[in-house]
Every structure is written in C-alpha cells, then in structure tokens.
Image (cartoon, rainbow, N blue to C red):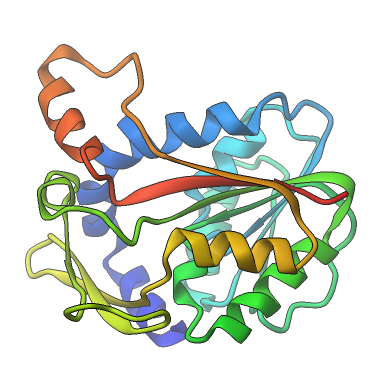
Length: 243
C-alpha cells in the first residue's frame, strides 16, 4: 500500500479535483457532525494521507493534532501544507499495524483506512492500536468504504469499483478514481457488520454506523448529483467509545 499511495501523491492534485465533490458535499459534513466540539481536545488522525481532514480537524479548535500515515509521499505533502500555512499539526510516518502508542487522545479519527486491511487479523490489530491511543471515555470517529455502494452513486462521486462477483471478507479489488487516465487503488472488501464486530472485539462500545448524506448547504445546482451520490453511497461513518 505504501508504493501505491506514494504514486498517488505524485498526481494528487488530479485526484483531489475528482473527489472534492463527494468530500465537500457528503463526507466532510457527515464526519464533522459526528466530531462535535473539539475545542481543547487532543486528536490523533491515523491514515491522514496529505492531511486534508487533519487540517480541518485542527480548524475546529482541537488543542493538539497528530497525523500519521504509512506513505512517506503523503506525509511529505502534509508537511508541505503545514509549512505553507502553519497550524501546529505534527505529521509522522507510521504504519497503523505496527505503530507504538502516540499518547492518550480524546479522539482518534480514521478516514478511509480500514478497507486496506488484507485480513480480519490485520484489521483487528489496527483497531487495537486505535483503542490503545485513546484515553478512557475517548471517541473513535471513522469514515469507511461502503461495501454495498451502487454503481450510480460511485459514478456520481467520481469512482468505479471492480469488486469480484459475490465478494468474500477480505477479497482484494480495485477502485478507480476517474481522473484522466484513471487512478487505481487496491483495497479489500469488508462488510460493515464485520467492521463493527472487529471494533467491539478490540474493546470499543457504543459502535454505531450510518451512510454519509448530503449537507443541507449543498448548492441547488449540485443537489441532483449529491442525491445520486447518496442513494447507496461510497462511504459511511462509524463511531465508537473506549470505556
């Protein structure tokens, strides 16, 4: 996965131009609503990529934000953005599967991370790492791929998925971001029920999920496309608590 995201980093501006519609009109508004009031809190953003959501999290008033990702190319982009507009965010190259504790955080976020787990055991390790980095009472907020997204919603969002027929847990498949030429990324098939079970096994409680939905502020000219994205959307949110 490191190599594929280092390659994506080289042309990320093209990818960002395609994914910005679903991110701005569905993913971020849905995610932001679940984050709640972050003022004064410590937040760890695992799998932060180039830091798009990480910067938004800091702008919501978090006192201390750390972003980690296993791709050196993506972390380089995040650090470049921090250098251009300093926000006090720390970015580190870390693999969630092997990452040592970074501290006790009030909130851990994971945006499009869990579908890179190649086995249930790998996802379990990732879940345990997130749990270990939360203080008691801390919250986990996840944005994850929807295993049941429709072709119509995918196309409206700027994606195509190439799942195998009758996919099984952990099956590998490609997602193409509809840049020119398409940018392909390999991910794995994980039903929502499996993700919930993995999080509960790792010690999380109050695990709930919901599909992303269009924001009330979507421009009238964009409403039809946003509603197509939301019919059976490409992503969903999951929240959980560390007792």
